[in-house]
Length: 509
Image (cartoon, rainbow, N blue to C red; front, side, top):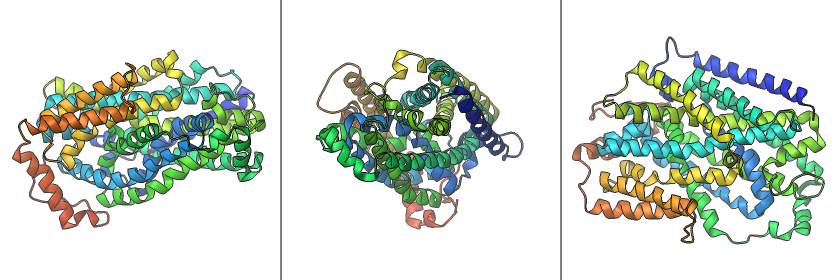
């Protein structure tokens, strides 16, 4: 495929995207406050939040990695979509409580909530470090996946390194310019664009393979791909990482903070499973398995299976390929931009602000966050150019989700289980991360994935240490668990569009 038409279409796509981000960022009168920049002024409505949250998951993991996983592993991989149902439930169970506390006390990061509840700076810093580290692999695959697709579709005229450069520059510009509001509105555009590309591609590929007869064709070519080989450990790892661990990742936590009301989150929770499941499971299943049939993606191999989509269009419809690679970049950018902003705010507020011993002022917080955005953009750029940064997308992403899963016990202590102590949460998080590292990188095996193994050890250590250490203070119990009981019991959260706060607890930042 000629590189020039691709670059012209991508330039137009980029111009539209940057214009949306810039205009959205200007909606805040005057200079943006830290609250405007990091959580959108806590005024994000249902449609924007739903599409922004969905677009965050519609990453290169979906548009490239999942296609490759179906090609390599077969139909059993579709079971991972169960996580979308759990995720919707967890948005309501956990997200509304996070929203309530964030609004009541003016929090911008998960670490602020952690320190306030547990009265622990060390736990705040540890949670921030694990949160940032968990996002780096997921950010990395966005840049590497988009660059790889661009290289494939231009027959190498736009090499991988140049693609990485273009992707990181676009992301950095959006986040630096517009902050959370621009990111959310960009995600809305990107999510709709991405969905249109996915639907079109599925219909196009079904036309190539005579419709749903593709399953019969695949069974003749490789019967193992349409049978369930039984991999409960691998599936459990995906369910836990994507479903139970995803809600606690820093960028999702801050999306909860950004909601206009608890009612907004309730509507998002209901719509999320429908929006996510068919986009992340059914369409990739069709396209990934279709690539097994000779002639659909003529050049595909196991090693290049993460580029199935660009290979299909490069072979059959080069003139449309530029729109497809724009969709891939849309998926990448819509995921990394919110993760980049979240990671930067964690460094600014939870690490820099904590280590210097005093809270950052509003202007300082925004300024430091922007500086860190630039630094993290450079870090992701450098990592994407390393050999490890260009590996298969799903395994790299699973490392990030597994790390995020280790944050769950300490988060549940604040939201539901008042018996979890600071010492228990701290020891459990260290033990969980250490176990994951041993399983993932050290080659130690206990029959389960790294994330699952780490979570089980984490829970056991958290429970054991909490039994013999100092309980959470009565003030924290009152400020959190008693507030939940009052607020949820009073039904305030059910009032559409309300941001009413109980009067018993004084507001403090």
